[in-house]
Amino acid sequence: MKWLLVLCSCWLGHWCLGQNLVPNSGFEEFNRCPTSFSTDPKHFGPNQWNSPTIGTPDYFNKCSIGENGVPRNWAGVSYAHSGVGYSGIYAWNNKTGNYREYIQCKLKEPLKNRASYYIEFYYRISSYSVYAIDRIGLALSDSAVWVRRDNCLEITPVFSEKKKLETLTNGWQRASAQITARGGEQFLIIGNFSDNESTENTKIDYREGKSPMLGGSAYYYIDDILVSPIDDAPVIDSVSLDSLPAIRPNEVYILKHIHFPFNSYELLPSSFQELDALIAILKKNPQWKVNLSGHTDDQGSDDYNLVLSANRAKSVGNYLLQNGVQGDRILTQGFGKQKPLHDGNDEQARMLNRRVEAKFID
Image (tube, rainbow, N blue to C red; front, side, top):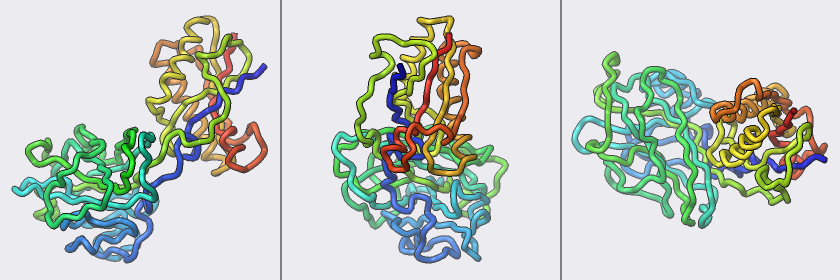
């Protein structure tokens, strides 16, 4: 007998995580191609985005024939995290006055009371920025923010990435969090919400500012913002590993509550309870091995789905390894979209096809 434990795992962002509520989340759409840095908040170019203060965030796109191109622009050299566009903000300045820039957008719909959401954005220090800081955050508001000043916004972010921001590899970094909404939040703002006294800064000694402003500032690129509801998929009758009366070898179990961010194979903390149940079974049966297989739906290319499914199975295997299961007891493989449970291409069929399976071998 085969028990089907329904997977809730965000394969390609449609299962577990719902739609992205952030419009123009990768800054690909614009009303005018940028030519230079902004001197007026009204000049900020990407559609659906604006400045909530008189600070002047910047827009960069491959279309630019001026100083705001991608990958090369007046602030540094960087390809977009995805696509051909991104935004840029001064997140800290060593002068008095706490100069800050922020970017703001209206979500596609307000957040729901007590609903869970996954939030993510990517940031990267510009290569001509002489300083790095230890934080960058994201705030949510019920109404649009507009203030006639350019210093710190007096808003508490829903989360702030507080760590020494990467300065050496100069790569894109991911900031992410899971939140529970109080309801009604419909505007998103990204920037540094702490004053100079609270913000730790680091001077990058080997860099020289390409302009007086960059020479005394921390400047960051921003790309690919995600706000997505969690667990908004239809409820399907299922049980978890720890609720089954017996687990048998040589049968396939489809793991429930294994969560990944959109387009990623990094496990979310909400996966750990189910994975701990899997570990308990293996410790109770020390002679067993486990074969973990990843599967996707029919969307996307064969090669992409094959790699993604394999990496997600490996992530589950790595969690077991880090929690005391010997490596020679763990087998992982990815099948992409080769082995669907259902042949249909509607969302119900796709949800059942996006899964991680565990087979115990005695």
